[in-house]
Length: 324
Image (tube, rainbow, N blue to C red; front, side):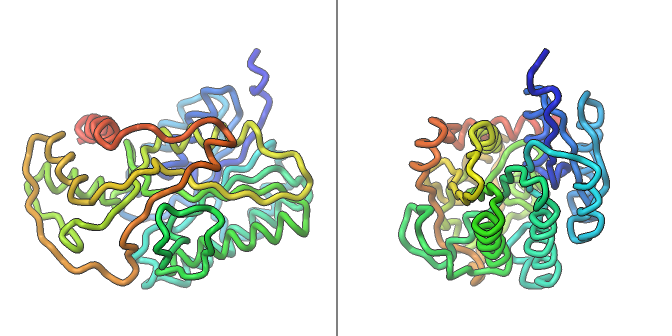
């Protein structure tokens, strides 16, 4: 019998892009996954429904329709269940939209995260939660390292994630709760959200429609394949520190840069079609460049993302074409 079979983990945002992949990983490893999601009705709602249907067909998966913005409901969840581990991915995502809907971004990403921390005060189960490379903001020292200051966010989304990290430190230091923040770098792959550049590019190029590039596609990003993100999280969770008071933070990225225009060319080659490009000037919320220093991650788990952009895009293409 798998020794993990009796271990129950809580996974918030389970119907999301990364949450879905992560749930599958833990289910395969024999864990019982209790997933929660508010199933927000956005452009990717149909994808969320399909991901959830996929998960509900598997053994040892339980779903509860819960919104982390509701403190009482979150508290009740922790009163009814005991967790070995909490994977907190539920969040409002996206840079540009965050300026227009700042109240909900802050309510979800900051207050909602505090609701998870508060509800866990009695159990003190280890928490791993999703932060973002956007917290580095207006920092021009590349590659980004975990010891750099995160005091210059360029968007409300970035500010909300930086705030969540600061609060995580507070809970770890003052309440003895092991919390690890993971700064994801431009994640892509199968089942990605519809608002993500990779999906938008695939769809527009396939349908012969225009795509918009900012600064002629010269922005630099550290594109990271979702499978590498999942493997990193899983390995980190198996060695979550047992100290009563600890906060940790790790970059998870490929550790390499690629221009957005290079991404477009790779997708063009994967589909065998040319893109129709419209160039625009980038908005203030966009970072010029991102790149992860993953030395601390490798030192901790002896693993770092290795899937090349070409390999990852081909895997994404296969999913995209098989899903219409």
